[in-house]
Length: 319
Picture 1: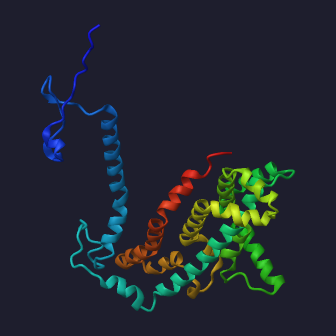
Picture 2 (picture 1 turned 90 degrees about the horizontal axis):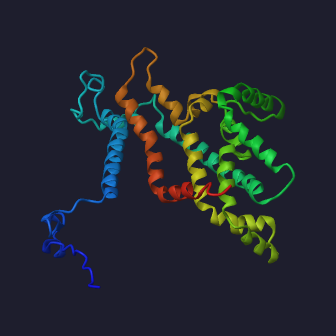
Picture 3 (picture 1 turned 90 degrees about the vertical axis):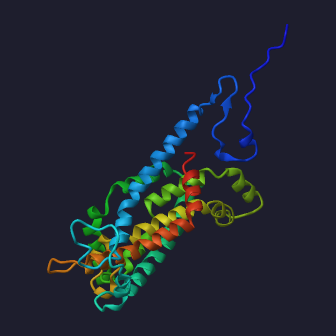
């Protein structure tokens, strides 16, 4: 039988020489451009839609940044202007120079609470999650389900009860709780339901053979936890730490309930000071302060972006 010759598509000389502007490849039989594969067209359309959605999501942030460089009059004018005129850097200086605003003090308070919450949530949740994932005991499933059910209870439901508990502790232990930072960070040292669930799902993906080999070598349970489990769980621990930081950094209701003095305010609560009691607000200063509040979160995300995405992608594969 004579051999069947397959048609050969010859790429243009411009593409072979590395000139990308030569255009798409052409079929020599019809002298017409070869259409892109359907998957490629769909991918281009998907990326275009995602790009448009990303730009729409950036509009509020760009408006916030734009208003922070305006004067008080131009920030409220109608129709609004897109470009600040004049461009006022002084707004950020006024945040730290005017006496009624204590940005550095509020930032220190927020950072202190955030560090204590992140440490407490990460350490305590890792211990509890390891018990649910790797240690078999009677009633483990029931306790885990009971723990998960607490995630459905919002803070406003338990707010009054927790306030009464902290008041009772202050009355009968001789240690002040209300009006201090303790109610904002001490409960996190007893674990967080969401963080425990997240870490437990990650610990399940770690092979039990590693723990069994360590036990044969005489390693204790704490040694297995610190030397094997925690080093392998760094992506998940970073996700838990980042979520805990975001939660406490943006928390407004907790400081509002427990803090009683202006020098104890956090940044989220301090933003309320920019709203005048007479009905007028300095929107340019409020937007500048808001930029400073969200700036650490944005920087932290970009620094830990790879670890954060890795932790999200590898958590919950099993179980």
